[in-house]
Image (cartoon, rainbow, N blue to C red; front, side, top):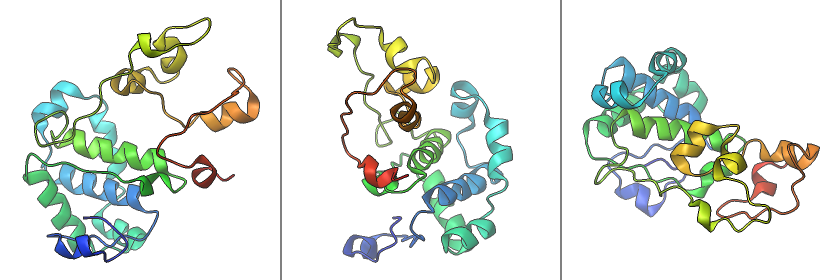
Amino acid sequence: MVDPRATPLAKRADIHIQIRPGTDCALALGLLNVIIAEELYDADFVNNWTFGFDELKEQVRKYSPEVVERIAWVPAKAIRQFARMYATNKPAAITQGVSLDHCINGVQNSRAISILIAITGNLDILGGNIYNSPLRQASLRVKGRVSVDEAIGARYPIFSKFTGETTSMPVTDAIISGKPYPVKALIVQGCNPALTWPD
């Protein structure tokens, strides 16, 4: 369990990673570092369903458990133990709370955790992480309706195809600049943009 607080649930966990608040992404990258370096990833899944693995390997090399220890205040030994436990106990699932959205790196936190889920082969399996099916075009009731791909997938087509959504990262730019079109309304569920993106 990853939580800065020593909650009653954390006390029951086999491993409690008492992380420095706001360093979840660094922790996930440290876990990826160990899993890739020790070849604990699901090679079949990686070879058949992913691309960019060599680039990922190169990026996470910078996040050794010792480096992450200085960033996240979690002992390197605990990071290795946690990575090995997660990668070698399949199926395994990671449940994310809204606290990951409550910092400036919310999207990147979720992105790193999604990569962790995928390369360990815990994606779309019984007992692992299952994602919702994509949004159906028929459910969009928009005047002068455009296709889902046009509406939400043009800039990030792979993300959109996988999730049926688009990343929220360009929303703030669109609100400020009015491009590619003015934002007139925003429906927000499960997060607080005023808290997550205060600037």
